[in-house]
Each structure stands twice: as C-alpha cells, then as structure tokens.
Image (cartoon, rainbow, N blue to C red; front, side):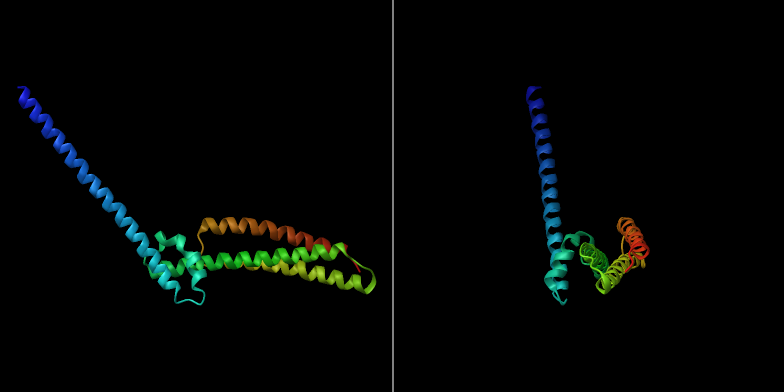
Length: 179
C-alpha cells in the first residue's frame, strides 16, 4: 500500500511539474512575442518617419503610441494628425501668451501724447491677436473627429476660460484706456 501511495504521489508530482513547465514555456513565449511585436511596431514607426521631412521629431512624437498604431498605416496617420492638431493649438496659445505679455509690458511703460496713442493701439492689437489665437486653437480642435472627445473637452475648457478673460481684458482696455 505504501509503495502504491508513493507511486501515486510521484506521478501526481510529475504531472504538476510538467503542467508548470508547459505553462512557463507558454508565458515565456508570450513575453517574447510581446517584445518582438513591440519592436516590430517601433521599427514600423521609425521606418515610416524616415520618409518625413523631420524624421527624428516624427519618431519622438509617435513612438509612445506604438501599441495603438502597431503596423496600421491609417492609425499611424490619424495619430500623427492628432498630435499635429494639439501641437498647433499649443503653439497658438503660446503666441497668445506672448502677445498678452507684450501688452502688459507696454502698459508698464505708458507715455503721453502721441506715444500714448500708439501704445494703446499696440495693446489693443496684441490683446485682439491673443483672442484670435485662442479662438483658432478651439476651432482647430473642434474640426471633425481628429482629436479624442476627452482631450478636446480638456483643451476647450482651458482655452475658453482663457479666451473669456482675454475678451474681458480687451473690453476693459477699449473702454478705459484713452489717449
């Protein structure tokens, strides 16, 4: 009886060991496959970006999306376009901030007479241009379904708040600064 129990135990142990090894091989193969796929996806993006005017910038902006893009040309193009639209919006807001800074700097150095008239006109122009830049950003984001709804909403909320403040500032400047 003891020998039979020992044999059953050994057989059970052997089966469990074989089961573990087969699962381990499957797990290793899956990890290896995932690594191979991710390398393939990254190479696809790199190769595609090599055909652009700015390959390093292209790859840098898209490489973190390799698992979304995979080797799908349409996903590659859509992702690139989404990044471009968001970057354009950031550039517009950056321009807007520069124009608002210029306006503040000019207000710090208001003169008199004809110089004052020119300075107020400059301030009005810069604040108006800042408002235009902000609106351009939201217009670009709103066009079509190129940017995800959640990203679109976050950008829109921030830019609309900025645009409201800029619009109010322009109205105050127009109504209260006289040469």
